[in-house]
Amino acid sequence: MLYPEVNLPTIAVPQSSRQQKYKPAPNFDFATGDFILDGHGRMTFDDGQSAFEKWCVKTCMVERGSRLAYSDKVGIEFEQIASKTSPEAVKSALIRTLTEAILVHPAAEYVKNFSFSSDGDELRVTFDVKGRDLPVTTISVIY
Image 1 (cartoon, helix red, strand yellow):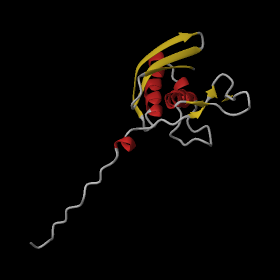
Image 2 (cartoon, helix red, strand yellow):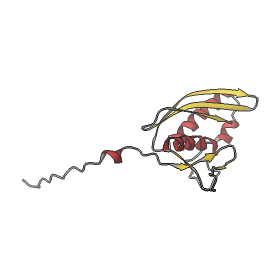
Image 3 (tube, one colour):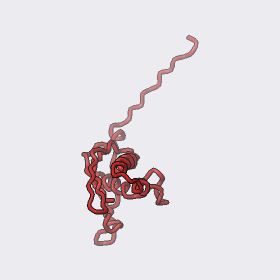
Image 4 (cartoon, one colour):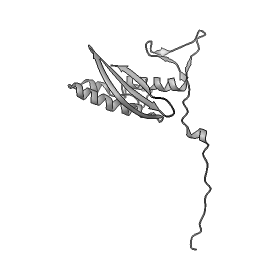
């Protein structure tokens, strides 16, 4: 034999490290735009599932590239979408950009079942998000 054969051992990855873990995160109140504090002035925390859901909502509300604290991968291009003239073009662009924005999260599996409703100048977008090892969650955002 000209070249020796080397059999490398197989490294077993523990089952717990394969699963996506959802970590608790500070509880955020979208109405006030601030973190929720307990009676002693300490931050309260959401469980992992609630934190993922709130991350999805927050991502849908941020204009991409408008915050120095976030990378260019976070948020949507709503200003460009709002300039479209056709309602169908707006809906199509929202579906695309919302899906792209949420699928940035490594644990997001899919975004689908979009529905739209309008009331005056407001546009409500409702859709389903599925995270790994989480049930499907319905998200609703008003623009």
